[in-house]
Length: 219
Image (tube, rainbow, N blue to C red; front, side, top):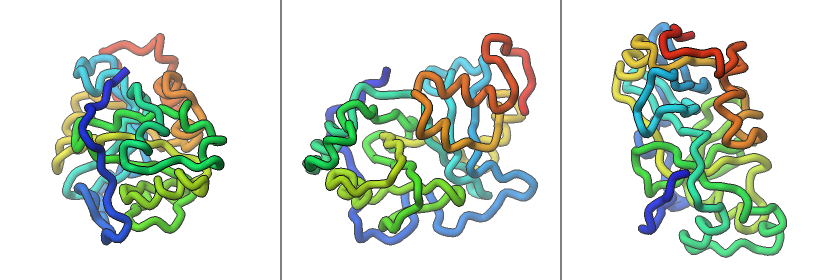
């Protein structure tokens, strides 16, 4: 379990324009390969201490690179604590949603003090991109202000930090059998316990993680 730093966390001010933290408002597709709204599943051969054993949801993949969020690596911070640290006090309606049992995830090693919210439905938040017709990614504080007031998205996952790849870097890692790829399933992000998401993502490919070896190829 990851321990977040004790420094102040940040979400963008609600009035910020679209586009942020390496996310483009109008992503340009990679010719022949667009893995937006896909899971990256780390192969057993990946021994990286950060990405080994992870499932990453790719929020954006374009000619400039890729950006995603690790969705199966929980921190020891619960959502109610995060809200307090960004000066939001959960109301009675929010407390009934069990915010004290919803872990904040470690989204990746980039901008580890910035918050990212994956959610359904898209909603009308200040700074949001839409990786799919079903899932939105918001970095503006207004989405968590709504959560604190009991009016947040129906389903959501909050991370601190994100994962980023420069142009061509992800394709190179996939070519070295570092990652399996599969179209994302929202139920794995929002309804499956964090510790079960790796196996659940593997099963989308018809793979039993116990049978997978480091020498296997990629999808």
